Amino acid sequence: MSKKTGQRLALLVVLTGVLALSAHAGSQYIFATFKGEDAPNEKLWIYTSADALNFTQFSDTGGYGGPTGVLRDPSIMKHTDGKYYVCHTVESWTSSTTNFAIAVSADLVHWAYLTTINVTVPNTFYAWAPEWFVDDDGTVNIIVNIGTIDGVSFKQYLFTAQNSTLTSWSGPVDMGIAPNHIDMFVVKVAGTYHAFIKNETTKFIEHAISSSLTGGWTWVGVNDWAGWGGGLEGPALIQMDNGQWRIYVDRYPYGGIWTATSPNLYSWSALTLCLSNARHGTVIKVPVTSQTMSVSAAGGNLTVSWPLPSLGLTLASNTNLTSAIWTTGSLTPQMVGNQWQVTVPMSGKQQFFRLQQ
Image (cartoon, rainbow, N blue to C red; front, side):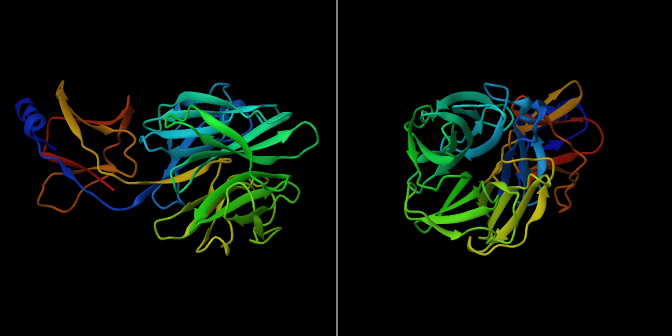
């Protein structure tokens, strides 16, 4: 869009302006997490990254805490309807709970409660760390870690969506993992399910594989097989654009989210700190897409706006369209409703704007 001196020329831009969009291939990574054990930190926070390693806070989501006001262990998914869904624990780790909840958002900022799922496992005392898993055929599942009051330690159960709105669920189905494991995260590669899960006795993250999601698991990485040591929980994995796998773990004795990489899920690099002041969460990968900007003129100012979340895009300006030099950083957008907005005065030099990665 161009901005020229004077009200008349600015209004001409609104009607006939030229939009310059820079389209780039690539992905943006979204990390949903909570921050700590006290009430103000048991809420949803969203971070984003262009490389799956260096994350910056995208939004505090208005302190969304779900139906109980306590939100822990959020797992995020982008559904086929284009919206984002988070399933999460609804009580502190010191409190009993027999259900978990789901929230929905169109823009990663404004979240709304969707539904609560009762786990219906006899003698349930804890229903923790629900985790999305979407199978190759599009079936949407949630894996839930359930502990009981009759001396049986945590086991994993599968719940499966019965409608596209994710408000009706079947289950629970025992997934066949040995007791005393928690925080199960599953990825599927070439027909094989890979489970990464915390051993509650040793505090190591272990690795099992199976041709079925609900049984027949074979342990291929136990004890300190990856060389990461103990004191780890909440594993979450993502396959990056370069084909490498990255795992994120909550290293709770030291603090923060730590990460490692692998070419094949079997051999891993050492852990390094990825994000401090964050706890058990989940990362997803979404494509960076171009967005259409709009402009409006009022009171001697021009407002440039584009829709949330528009991840990975930055507003750039230029005073000459024949120049390849576009300036970023001088225009800081603000969240207004469901849009990003930048307001500039309609005076001074001619300017052009575009969104770029």
